[in-house]
Image (cartoon, rainbow, N blue to C red; front, side):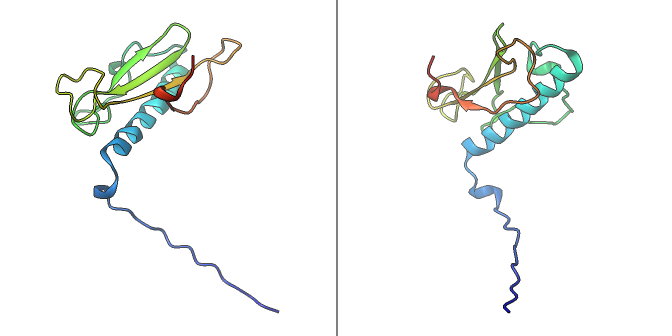
Length: 125
């Protein structure tokens, strides 16, 4: 009889090796979760990110380049989060920024409890 032991080690990756785009996406995922928490407590989408819980010095609504993450919600419950990227000093969409989309309502019109982010460039309308 052979007895084996598997050992798993936690690998910690220094944040310096994580790309700025990945850091921004991580912040957008946090915003996604906060939006669903807001929906659960308020029964509606926030009109802006300023309605979400925010502590002084908290940079979770800024991209990796220090610019505000843009939030836009449509009447059907679709939400777009975007970052202008490193080369756009105005903070507006365009250039080499990133844009993600998620839905907050199901096909029946009811609120969802969660939904993943999708790169907006990969969505087909």
